[in-house]
Length: 433
Image (cartoon, rainbow, N blue to C red; front, side):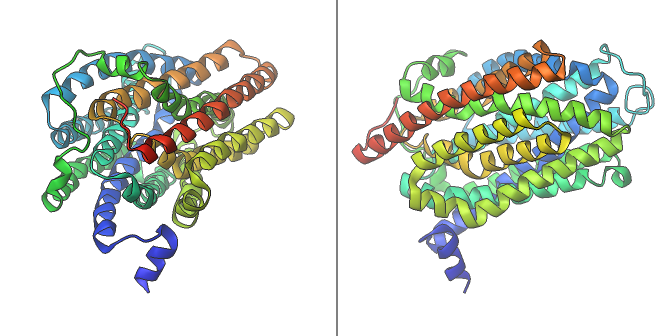
């Protein structure tokens, strides 16, 4: 019965493949579960300590900080074996969230002090740290996975990984819906413990699958400069196409996201109630993604192909933008963000990760980190700049929707190009270096 269910949901997955991808799914469970727990809290803490009007500027500040973080990360890729890099980053983020937990509960530094002030720097640092977690850890994990599997196996296994991630994200966000009883500081403490489990799971994986340490498609490798990943990114049109499909939705998402956050801050007066709303948002997003990942992602990819899936996503988001343009409310913004984020995690992410299969090690570990980290945060910063440029809500709705629809048009064209190019590279056995 179990084998029948596995074949129905994910295709002809062998027992060994299922065990391998199941373990990877468990690793991603803790990474994404931690991220959604602290992500659901970051705007809550920032809005109540610094002020909601500074949220667009926090996004831009995180983009600037991420440039320096990625420069250092590029050197770490040269210095450390990849699984050891996972160990290091997990330990750093575990210690960081433990510190945030203590400061959030501090009577004058934390949430107990209800006087908002842009000079309360702790909240800026916490916001930037959470953004760095979202940029580095998933990118590092997917780079590790992409170097350990081949294309046919990836088609079957990536949806299994995403299913585990969505379960983790649902549970992480669900904990935030209990912020009034657990406490925001203690939630950060749970995040610290959760991310520290990741290196233990990676250790188990490399012990059971030592072949994963033998990176496929190895090319001659010499230590490179801190901007090597950025140079590689703009050296090939295929990689520029991946950058577009990986990041353009973030421009639209950030415009809608900040509109929703502004409306939510006004609707929910206490940090705990606002946190519970954000937790409910996270649960809704990830339940949609989880259901789709379990019963829909693999089926749609296997029957319609990656190009269709990559184009279907921007078309869906374009329809949501049109709805916001015509009707505007907190719950319409909520529903649009749920669709945008949920389908991103369940459909767009597995597709774009598959695009890295016919690429070299340096692209997977260096160019990819710039795409997912700096590229994604640049797109969010662009969306935040649009919001900051139109402080009147009626203007933001009109011009934000117009800009978003223009982005959708470019996004569709790039998705078609990347999908068809990937099919040709896989068919001809070529590698982008």
